[in-house]
Image 1 (tube, one colour):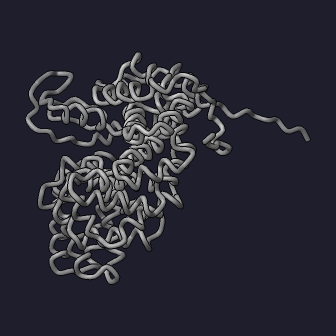
Image 2 (image 1 turned 180 degrees about the vertical axis):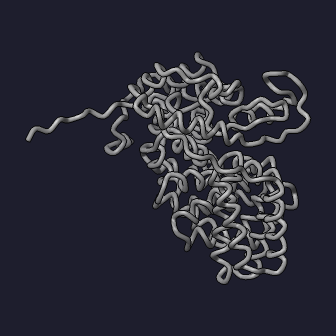
Length: 436
């Protein structure tokens, strides 16, 4: 028996076949000129692909793109007959690489969203966990179906309703309402990209309340990986809103230990990055709160851990770790820990101009804080690992005004010690030892 092997066509070959195929003009969207997948007809009588016309209307346009006439309404009526013709044409041309066009889901309407949110508010007032869970899952289902449905949900005030529900069930009992709280948090995750623009002061207060924050920290301690991620992202977004949220989180017990644990024993990049951002907000506070947190994190051994993170991590993670490291060098305990670690100077020097502009700023700032006591051994070690040459190059390439001032001051401090100091290559951090 002879077997004939048939080679599978590559995606590029399929695309070329589709391009060779002539698509009927009536099947193309007048805006994108692509094959329509969800044709809808406007009041002007012209049919467009739903995604294209929605983008047009959301851009503030009030006219039909083809006829240029002002639309009497923004209703988009599904053109089922045309859609079936397109699907049949696609099936008939499968050999030309045309992929099957699925029947599109009907988008959620504002009325549907408003009704479910109204019922969710009622369930929240009555602390009806079962009813609330069912309604949250319905909204989550809409959010998973399309970006358009997500925007519709958020535009109708979902964030405020969800914030109130989370606060109410957290205040009632974390243990009894853990399931509904997890579901609310999971659903809010895809609302966070537009979180800052949609969250009013009342919603901020509810999601940033003591009970809500305590609930988030408890999830970080005992939840599974998914809920840990959702909780950490929620904390990061909350603290980015302002000082009030930072102070509120600072009052929660064990938050330092939990955050430090995620840096010392990472379980996933998303949590590690979000943890570093939350720590950064806590140690950057202008109030006395930051002083307490800086000392606490230094005592937990975070300085050495951050240096290891900076060495072995990719750009985004390294940049965040450098930002936190720089803030810890504000306190005397942090500077002492940094100087005791043989990795500090070579790591900071190596990261200048190697990661990002922000990472360079943090590296220079930390070196400036460590060197401003004018101790000879500090400045000599900085010279030995090539800081002087790096800073001269930084000035030549250009940098921000604050970084420029610190760079100039560092060069002046090191200049008297340059004679007789040999610059060493410190690529192998593991075997690095001080010569004095």
